[in-house]
Image (tube, rainbow, N blue to C red; front, top):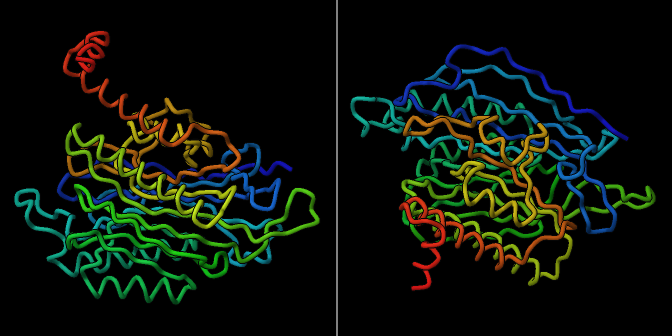
Length: 376
């Protein structure tokens, strides 16, 4: 059965994206994918976003938070009572909420941050929570949560907890002040295991791994059996590419995540596990990280929902960064475990050589000379 996707287009407002640099706050595209999986074997989930024409529901929500012009948006509603729906639906939200310690509020004095003004950061985060609770996604992945502020942390834990979410929080290493928060709704998932990944490299980046099991059983293809599907969920925030020399660091962070996922599945004797990677990847579709994940069988939920190709690099925008550049860097990646893909190490080596080749070509060395240079 084919169920068509429905999207409500919001009216455009002037300068919806081009807010001033000093008022920079992520337009925080909420990548919210609603998908219905189907199964060919007890532990083999075909994520619907990888298997059109199964139903796909996606919406981008440009947040109506203070300090900038906005684009209003209306999004698909997910039935709040999963048990009452015909199909078991799952939704996922990823959102960089911009920690107040990073949000500049004075263009003339960049050292002044929103964290100095409670009347600014407190209501902004209240509105963020209003938005999240209105969507009521099965999984919420947040980045740049101001974990160093007890009042803000308590607000997120209390409101999300009261709404039925189980919350997991992880600070960046070396006291950076911000971190990750992942919340799973008790109506949809129960926790099997939780792991924390500390990259311990430049940038003090971290990642969360949640091994969850669906509360409501999913039907198998034969219609006679139901299973409680297990899923691996990762939330992360990669290093910002301050210059091109950091490309290899960012790529290695992704490699560490995928390597850990492989080791975790082997350790726990898991097979055919669907994987969802959420977060702020700080890189576009033209970058090495994007190509590396694609080589490992991951697909962007946004691209599939909108029938975009890998070459459609400017079809959507997530925010304007602190340099004033318009970006699309927030992703919900999905991996169908039945898709064949290259060995991880092979993809890693190819990606590394691609970066080296790119850097040499940027230095005006011809391709033939570049490889001769490497062999010297």
